[in-house]
Image 1 (tube, rainbow, N blue to C red):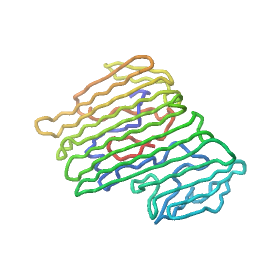
Image 2: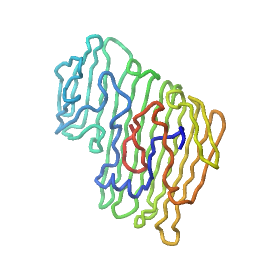
Image 3: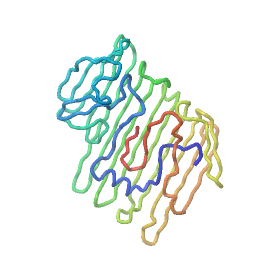
Image 4: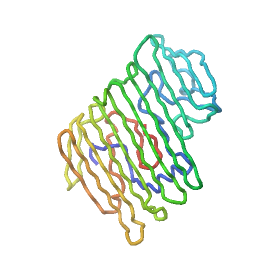
Length: 318
């Protein structure tokens, strides 16, 4: 692949293998774990909760180096304190379900919210919320994961107000076919004026016994905060180039039926499109291995940290 490297999809997307391996324990989605966005003065998720008792752990300490932290006000699933660097003061608030035991970002955290508010009448907010729910009936586990993160006003990182949204739905049946679909959106500036990343993926088992599956990925990126100048070379099928900040879209569909009796075939379709300066290259293949997604987004292009997006694997978005 060339410098386009759309999305962080790496390696093959054998949904029936990758999805079940990650989801058989019920871990349908790890939401926002290890987020690229950071809330001043502390990156999100540096805490845990045991039986409703929330503990903050920042590299082995409860307070960031160079900061002072007040004694927290605590309750069952509640933690609030003031933190200061001598010039800026913040209120840090963490809320979870009563009696819960989990780490932020983990699928067993049914609800969590972490926020930072700066004192002194300064406009802005750093906040991350997540919801996870799953229901198991017999061999079938159905799951929902959703999360929203905001950096506005004083908390924005130089690209304007930022929002990240994730939603995932899954159905894992240890005795039958599985399904998963995920949606990611990250925007910088008002309505994404400074940059936008949108990604949609789905994966479904066609035949559980043979491992046959079909996967789909669509990635749409635009704006100076999300797109560097680059190009993609599809060999005989052509080359597509774009400038920094242009709107580039990639689509991939793959199907693996190589172990299905009387079929024994894989196919893959890939298309890249420049929506700002119209241009399109695409390729279709029936060759072995074509059911593996070739779409990887250049990790040097901001923002980074969106992790692997293997369809159906249960990996978190950030």
